[in-house]
Amino acid sequence: MKSYKIIDLFSGAGGMSSGFEMAGFRVSASIELMPKYALTHALNFPDCQTISGDITNISPLEFGLKTNITPGEPLIIIGGPPCQTFSNIGRSKIESVSKADIKLDPRNYLFKNYLEYVSYFKPDVFVMENVPNLKTRYNGEIFKKILEICEAEGYKISYSILDASHYGVPQKRKRLFIVGNRLEGDFSFAAETHKNNPRTVFDAISDLPIIHDGIRADELPYSKSELLTEFQLSMRNSTGLVGNNICRMSNVRAKQIFEFMKPGDNYMDLPPEVRKILPFQEGRFQDRLKRLVMEQPSWTILAHIGMDGYRYIHPSETRTLSVREAARIQSFPDHFKFVGNMREQYIQVGNSVPPLLAKSIADQVMILCQKK
Image (tube, rainbow, N blue to C red):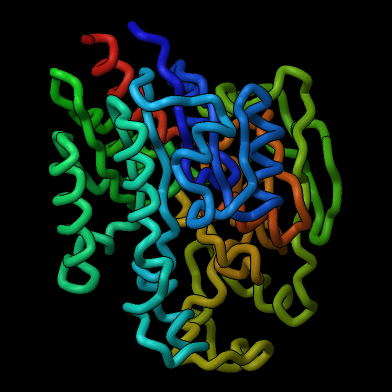
């Protein structure tokens, strides 16, 4: 098989990069707008040339000159253009603070920059990731345009909405993947390995360090070394220590409410007299508080975990999830380190593609490339 270079566009902290490296590829270059996220990527992928910059101001030619990558090389391009305006949650938040026509938001069209790189570098394969609503938003106009552009560039297109929990990620999270292929064979999405036996929050976090509300610690020892699950064994460091043990300090009233919540409860499951302890606009924030269930997969970890985290209350403790616990639920291995302040670390975790879900795509790309 040819030695492929991987370019990760809109790389964030590196969820897609991590998944492709798990599958045996090596990421050669990436670009990320947010400086702290780029620092996280650079730290975890030291052999990759990580560029911190705005892709709308860096042409594919300039990127190629900076990274010494030229069109025609054996290349694969991966990445997920920002999707806030396509997701239901993102759209509602944007509309709550802006009266502008959301269809005019420039973030709707960052896919064009991604496809400009595809058109210039002509990779054998590209993988674009986004939220499922990309298929239907604006009557499917943008999705149809993406497919038209890709087919005009000579790519065979495969796309599917995948649930991360069906691929070993201890989290229910659906994402849309579009795969373009210029090779002779056809791309096929991987069979679901965990649809009927999903990994759980217990699998994800039950061996992690014992911490307290508001902790600010780097490396701490694991809480146990016996009776580890298969997932835990695959995630753990050989040193016996793990970092990013940072947890938000919840306010006193919130913690009073946590005490009343059973696993699976959300804010509106509580009696009115309990909700009065920490009142919200109940028509808009019915699930503002939600306690995870240890024996089930987590619900989707969102970037909003960087704002308050109350939708991710620990299943049995009076606190919200730590950065490391959220990262485990996303399937980041414990050697992966996040940089930045607490809010930035949480957002990086929430914005990432789960590495194990990315690996399921990368494994199939590897099979396709080996046929050439």
